[in-house]
Length: 85
Image (cartoon, rainbow, N blue to C red):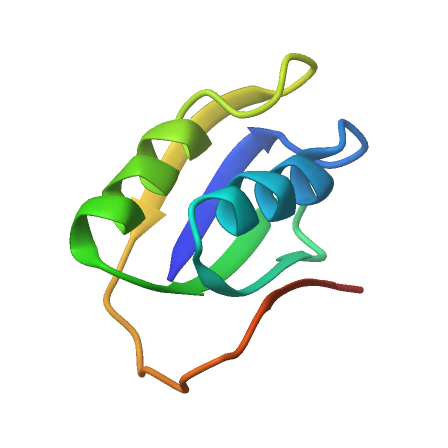
C-alpha cells in the first residue's frame, strides 16, 4: 500500500500511475483520498513494486510529491490495475 502526499490531485497522478503500473505488469488500484493525497494498492514482484515506489517519489510532471509512505498490505490477487473514484 502506497500513500503519496503533496500536490498530487488534479495533476493526472492517478492516470499516470495506472499507465506506469500497467506497463510494469502490476495489478491493483489507485484513488484520491479526501485529504488531498493519493492511495495505491498494488501487487507484483518486489523488484517491480520498488520501481513503482521510486516513480511515485517523483510522479508526473505537474505533481509535487512531498512524501511517499509504504506499508505491506493483504494480497487480494487483483487481475488488472484500475482507477477508483
